[in-house]
Amino acid sequence: MFHSFQTVSIIGLGYIGLPTAAVIASQKINVIGVDVNKDVVDTINLGKIHIVEPDLDVRVHTAVDEGYLRATIIPEPSDAFLIAVPTPFKSGARGDHEPDLRYIEAASKSIAKVLKKGDLVVLESTSPVGATEQMALWLAYARPDLTFPQTHGEDSDIRVAYCPERVLPGHVLAELVNNDRVIGGMTPKCSKVAAYLYKIFVRGECIITNARTAEMCKLTENSFRDVNIAFANELSMICEELNIDVWELISLANRHPRVNILNPGPGVGGHCIAVDPWFIVDSAPDSSDLIRTARNVNDGKPEWVLAQVAKAVELAQSRHGREVVIACLGLTFKADIDDLRESPSLEIVEQIAARSMGGKLLVVEPYVNSMPPRLVKYSHLELVDLEYALSEAEVILLLVDHALFKSIDRSSFGDKILIDTRGVWR
Image 1 (cartoon, helix red, strand yellow):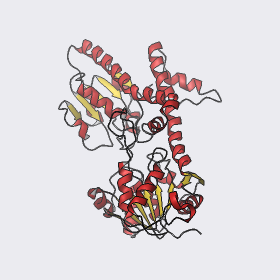
Image 2 (cartoon, one colour):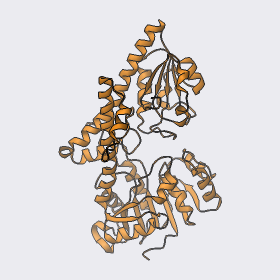
Image 3 (cartoon, rainbow, N blue to C red):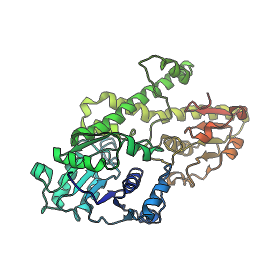
């Protein structure tokens, strides 16, 4: 046994941090959740949640009620600290794709004050290669009285490692437990201590490597998926030009025993696939042509969808002799969740509104209770229920394949013009 973890702190209580806190707390370990948002902290301390994830509400309520989970704004002493904060892009002259580590830096400095000899610090945030080492430098600068792996190796006071999550929204609780974890310590001992922590709640295999390889592994997994999606999205544009049903084409091609083409969509969203490949491109710009091209294909797909909408609106207006109503179905980045991060659907709706395509613009999103802030300024845009949208619109744009939308009877559309970016109504 390398360590006894009596108390674990999770820094960042978002889509990964909160489920991780709940899972660890379910093992009867004291968990302190730390977040800069007081509303989030207050909500969790009431045994409630601020995000949508199946069964998470029950897990959090139970953990809080039994006393194993509580939230705070200010970090407290613990035996291990798991950092799960955002890693967005910087705004600047490098194409807006330079990784921004300010949240990791802030989290590092906040926990540095309460570190003690023997503690473990694990970075879980998706990060560019070298981020774990940079985190360790921030910690060392803030706590010169402690030793760290970059200077004292296996004999350091503090253990530092990287362990990325690899979960699917909507299935996070199960995948946190069942998926294999790649654990990369700054030294072999750091890796072993971190693996001991994760084995408390992970049933999958904990595979040990070094920090840089673990960082690159997460980026590689999502870049691989991004390239595959880009191939499907490019196929969809080619097939539209050649008057071929792309979904039929893919289903036929996938009958080949060694072919597995993914399905196209309106673009790529979420904080992983839409972001992680750019971290590789930023680190090795001269050696990442394929990864960069795939990103550009997927980032360009919303503009192609907008061109299809413009054609549909022009056709509908010629039929009706007036401005037409457009219904956009879905805002989230994937089906049956409430996550809007990097959502191409949200971007498309915003551009339809900004370009004043058609007349009234109706939006249906069953997982959002109020209009997202970036859409509020458009007076001709309204968040409505599905029945109203289908009855009023002449052009219907399907952006997200929510179960609610899959249940629509296509025969009810009549002569409405449909743009189906997900292949739901083939």
